[in-house]
Image (cartoon, rainbow, N blue to C red; front, side):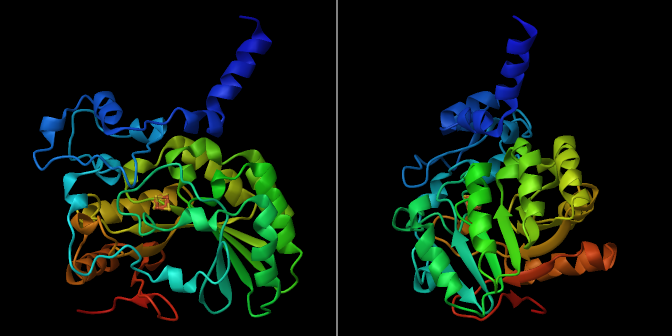
Length: 339
Ligand code: SF4
């Protein structure tokens, strides 16, 4: 193959969109790649019709072959227990449909709004509190950005716009740049925050162009990733995140506390240390939002607090995330101080 064609081929294969297109889309495919079988899951698997399987290959490659309890696998493999109904678990645990004040806008807290920039994700996390969210009614085509931007422009108390989703980094860089430019045209907005899990499952999403976009704007930018387990991080993450940090982007992380995945002090302490090694500061440790289908991931508040105490005892303060629960109708996340 000529060198130019070879180079183009390598470029295409490492482009995040190409990596995303190659994702695994069924439990059978996932189990085969990990040399596992349905019999390894005596409690049964789910057909996952309402919330299908979606797992990028780089994330699958960080799982341990032959291990049905792998902490990354448990986050994405639909188990039969998801189909059970449990009291207190609902389709909208955070009451977001009441705060969905305009198409593509969720306005919960003073001074900041969530703009649902993209409806899809690069990975379907089984515990996701938005697994039942009506994205179809909130699909913000570029032509509809204007209504969301008008809402923000009309409320001078909004100083921060949080791009959320789905996953906002599902937008192509060009479209993201266009959206950020329009947000920066609203004088009272000072800060831009992006909440994303996409770069965790496909590190190639942290493109040089993304760094340029986040630093070219007058808005102060921060990127909040969603890493749940130290095994999710790789040298490529460190390489790409360093570029963002050197460019001046604030880098934070939020984690969901998940039974069977990260509910030991050892894992959480290792996670905080690895986040720092990858230029991310731990920001939030969330207890599970009680969404229907995710009850098997729940860790009690008392156990969460006991884990938090162990983190306090063994880590410097800046590596201990805030332990919080989100409660519908509250003006802020609720810190879990004592039980
Ligand atoms: S990436 Fe985030 S929004 Fe998407 S399924 Fe996972 S937790 Fe939910």
